[in-house]
Image (cartoon, rainbow, N blue to C red):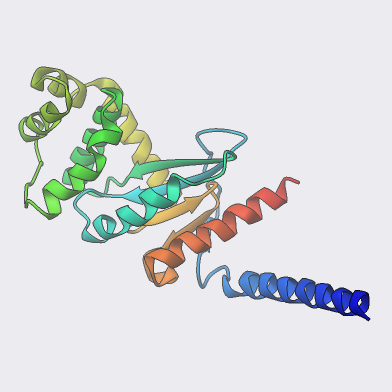
Amino acid sequence: MLKSAIKRFSQLLVLMMVSTLALAAESYQEGTHYIRLSKPVPVSVPGKIEVAELFWYGCPHCFEFEPYVESWSKNLPDDVNFERVPATFSKLWQTHAGAFYAAAALGIGDKLHGDFFNRIHRNNEKLADVDSLAKFFANYGVTEDEAKKALKSFGVKSRVQQAGARIRGYQALGVPGLVINGKYRIDTGMAGSWTNMLKIAEYLVEQERNAVK
């Protein structure tokens, strides 16, 4: 009797798990919760599943989303590559994109990323030109001259152009957004919440992982 009861209970658990997975799969629909891109965009690290965050430092919604995606990105599996792609929809956006890549080139990107958002949205600083950006960078162990050189460098300008090309390839019209493996874009309005954006991303990552098995 006991063995039979345990067996029936185990079967019930399996059915519940299958049902839960099926409901999860049905809850995220292409065209409703995410968009499949008409033409895939190449990923930065071949062999890994890419999650690209589209953002702009001046965007209040990106500022709100940042703590969620920052915490989430730290716990991703080894087969997932997370990277940020700054949007370049205007001259100011391009300036901030350049600052993002200049900071990375100087090795201070991770240190100042969160503070960049805070300076704009909490301190009401503009950080809209080379001089103000250089002074900001100087708080992180580089000189203003080093910062200006990086901000004006050909390499940084090239990275900004590449980011612009990726944004166009993603067919993005705004930020924040997530692009999974260069194939699927998740927008705020479609997801409904910051948490749901990340859940949809996890679902699509798993879809991509299963596709190569």
